[in-house]
Length: 47
Image 1 (cartoon, one colour):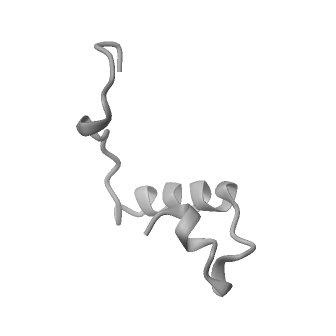
Image 2 (tube, rainbow, N blue to C red; image 1 turned 90 degrees about the horizontal axis):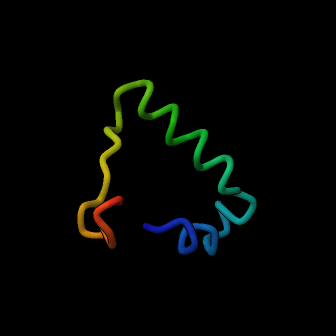
């Protein structure tokens, strides 16, 4: 589910992008989530 879809749900109406970033950072710290770059969204060599 994408963020913009999630905030349409009643449970997440007040959920901010800042809260999302904090939650994702916590999941990475706890090793429940591994951050990776999406190679399908590369537009230039610098990306």
